[in-house]
Structure formats: structure tokens, C-alpha cells
Image 1 (spheres, rainbow, N blue to C red):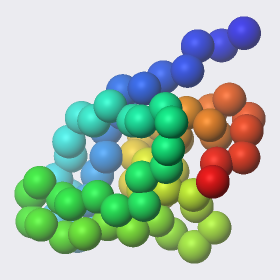
Image 2 (image 1 turned 60 degrees about the vertical axis):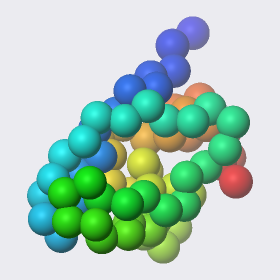
Image 3 (image 1 turned 45 degrees about the horizontal axis):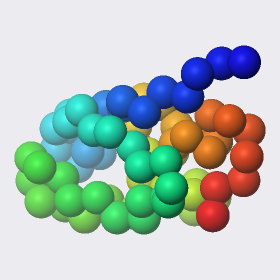
Image 4 (image 1 turned 135 degrees about the vertical axis):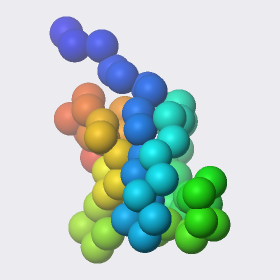
Amino acid sequence: MQMTILETTITCPKCGHQEKETMPTDSCQYFYDCKGCGTVLKPHQGDCCVYCSYANIPCPPIQEGKCCS
């Protein structure tokens, strides 16, 4: 069984700022304020959270093969 990775790097599509974050394990994160330019990131259509849309590692439920809601 593979361990779930909680640390990820989220990248702002507007300014390119990258920030290391710890993903929550008990909920999805629908909004994220870029620490570089202040843009509020929202998931792409079809993605469950901002980590699945803008981070280098998807959220914990997706990593575990579960539905993320």
C-alpha cells in the first residue's frame, strides 16, 4: 500500500508564484489565495479542488483512489 503524500507545491497560473502547502485530509479546498499576487484560485471544471488543478500532487482522496467531494 502506498503512503498518501500531504506536502505539495501549488503554482499560480497568473503570476507563477509557487508555495509549499500541506493538504487537508478531511476536506477539499475549493479556494486558494495566491501568496504572490492575491489571485483567488478555484478548481478547473471536473477537478475536485485547487490541489488537483494547480499542484504537483493531487489531493489525498484522489491519491487513494477515492471520490473527492
